[in-house]
Length: 438
Length: 176
Image (cartoon, rainbow over all chains, first blue to last red):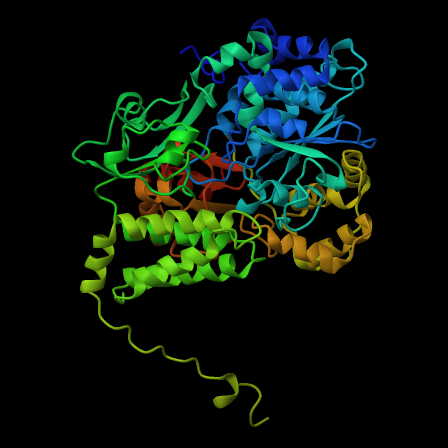
């Protein structure tokens, strides 16, 4: 497949607006501006494009939820928070083709009749925030953004907004809170952001890769996009492969290639002298998959049927050198650190799971630990929390416990009881230097 | 790439912060991006961290006053996010990614090497104030693991030798 999303990778000076325009850039926006906003949404709806941020919700449908008659302002937010472990695709688009993203943002904004769009980018991505600011300034200078978008009477301002280090802000309602200048606490849904979003106004939040798909849907048509992959799982997809493969990186492939093709063909297989032990198909929040599932198709529906999820398409590959209890502990540390703390099952559950896994690794596992871990995970998922972070930590950890029970048993069989904790001496129990006897 | 050193303004000089004309101009510009003043909080805090090196209590008061928020609210936001420094950082903050892909692809070894070489533990800083070592969660560059972020810059696919050379360069006062 010829690259669509990564066509600029390797092209000299690919970030510059002239390079983009010479390659037929902004033609999609030009075409969209001649259409009704509803017709643009219809085109995206027909393409069956599904959100690339993780949930896989049909993008066109999300746009239709914005109330048309709403009199006040509406907003489009591009989610460039990219913080799911194993995911590094959006950075690739911004690095090589920022104007592709800006064109997608402009078309989406036009479709929902928004005059302001924000790009919420994770705080660590300083370099990429600057790249976007430069590209936006270029576009504004050429009247592609601003008071009169490409000579039409449509106005659009795009602003870059940097986060400041919080995984949770990749969740759309948390992102909205953060954009409003608050702590990133997720909101209860409903109301959904399409009705009550940022600043209380209708808001659509779309991922970078999703928006980058939109320009070519306009120029080449919905039918072309839908011809890639299979029904309900259409279009090109960026797969980010990390871990123990020979050639990790971002690969643009038609949706629905198998994990075998991704891992063995494109990434050159597992590093020398080792074999595949497990892989996370869609970021670390997806239930882990085992080598017997390598022929599963890497699309939304096939991953769901296999009991996992495509998520963001971040494939983390682990070989036989990895202790799965250590992998579970590593992820537990991540989620315990990133839980926002609003909901008890997630805040306490992730901490508790982390403590148990650390204790097992320290050689003090107990026979009942795997069952306790599963119970903690059960109570943190299934809608017990405001946002999906509860599921995000529960699913990978419970799947590791279920699929690799013997690794836990091995640790626990060799375990010794933990020596009793030494309690700290209370401050007033001893002499108080510089205080007593003066 | 030149990693710019952080120059943290001492706390004594940040007890009563007044924004100069340049800062005031940039804040006013930021406020035009949003329909509410509060929404400019994160960008203004970034501006302050760039300028003063960290977010001192005096800076919190000044930002709160400028945006019409209470210092308690601003403090709450500052402490929610991991990237705002609430104490003066060293000149170079070494942020080693600890999450899965990096951990299994050499990140753990890099971290142990840095600890041994600098003689400090996670969260600590060298006595001369040149380096500070922190472990961070996923930096979103897993394909080029192991990754270390130093101040604003990413260093990817690092070997221990490359890291040593980098630390040498930075500690000699040259900017990498």
